[in-house]
Length: 488
Image 1: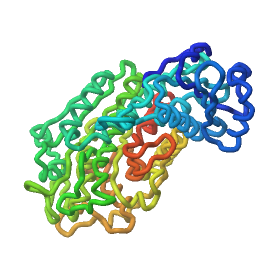
Image 2: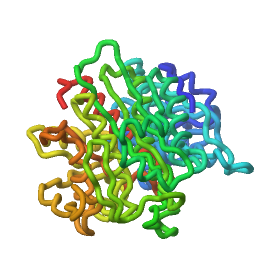
Image 3: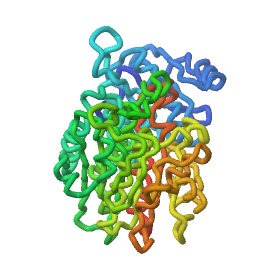
Image 4: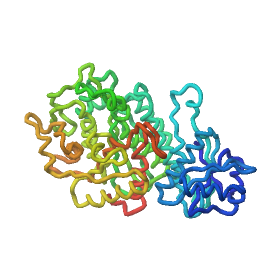
């Protein structure tokens, strides 16, 4: 959906559907007159129903009134109601008049993300209609930058959603790498897609062991944003898990309610790719590197088995107890590799554990960090960004005693703890690889997005399927680092 900006209300005369957000029960006199004599009755209905309400004036486009009171998340949800109306009517051009006091970013996000339809494989009828093609936003000139930023960020969310929703046979590891390279280079990023030989040369035993059951080669994506005048001397590193399809390997998942959604096990990688494209297009003055290890996890060929001992990138040996605890193996290699950048902060994003879904449900991601002097600042930064974007996160513990569950009789670690506290034991496993041989590590945040990354039933501006969760959260955190002190 293309976004055009205007300061002139008359430019909305030719749209197919005009969205009028109503704040405090009122709209401007100009729009009241245009709505015609039925406006007061319609507004009263809106006050009662709190849902998008259509008005058919004597002339001009159809109007849809939406309640725009409340915080940014409420405004996103309200705008998503208008988007649902636009989809139901199959209109091509939507107008949005942003009233005083409303949040233009939230309204644009709600409209664009609420109108999202994934139609790549639809071939006929209404199901193949791709959604509105154009959004015209009328607001004051002072709001232009915010509207344009919302357009860039929602483009990135849509990219992440599309990557997750693609058929897994199109998003093999190398296929995902090609898509990321195309999108990244178009945005001005420097992108490398490593092949098996380069991965072997780097000694990434965790990634290679998971790939042993696949007929498709693995990939390791490196994406770099190199601004001309960075505000930090050391880069931020984003790490995204991209298991392009997870059968569980020889520890095979059941199909219904588990394996049938596992094309989404690369949602962390998709979020990182989307965030990198957004920050490049926004021109954030932060040096940022993304590392995305990728493979599928299948039980064929020479698949890794419980009992195998794997030597990881940093030399740590890991005993495999369950081949369905594979994502941490990929991430561990990437977190170890990240040390060579001497990073100011590393953030990994992953659909890592079912335990976090049991704990927090499908609306909230788990937030973990290493316990050091900066831990509270990191937790606060991500929690506040989550509230601002509606991509909610909640702090979870990484106490030392969780390490007890990862002790192995035959190796340095085992890849699976017990049933209890599994999200925290998985996080503590990852934390091991953020530290060097002397025990010194970098500031690190782990986001377990297994709940909100993929929905079986949509709500408001989040569709069924890939949601793109994490893109807006990461961009908000990075914007804060770019505009504040820069301290991680």
